[in-house]
Length: 153
Image (cartoon, rainbow, N blue to C red):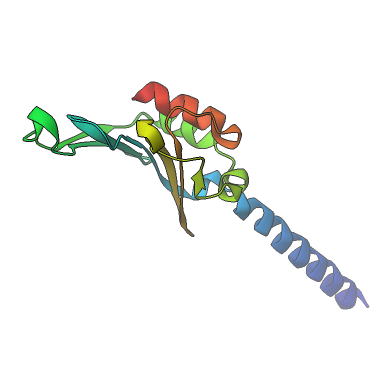
């Protein structure tokens, strides 16, 4: 009789634990491996494309020119910097993965009428998801993340 009670308790624990882990996994910010934030402008000369990648150890910024106008020989730029652990933690804590993954991959009309495009891409151990939107627009589900990343650029 004692073994049967133990088995029932163990089964309940396993079922409860598995469902809890599923919920945690959906918004497990500690599964994030990188975050990219970028902007681009189609009708532009000079550095028209900028992307910054953040991970737990480094910030990598990449810029390139479209090759239009008098600045068509501008070389690509690549800069790296060691990230402060507090900065990385504040960035990932501003993310709700459940809400981010509900966003459509395109919001509005990015870079229509030369307004520019902006994007956030988040990579986790399970998947990579990218959302592109009009430059400078606030997206409610990622307001805090955008605020942090925009002040970095």
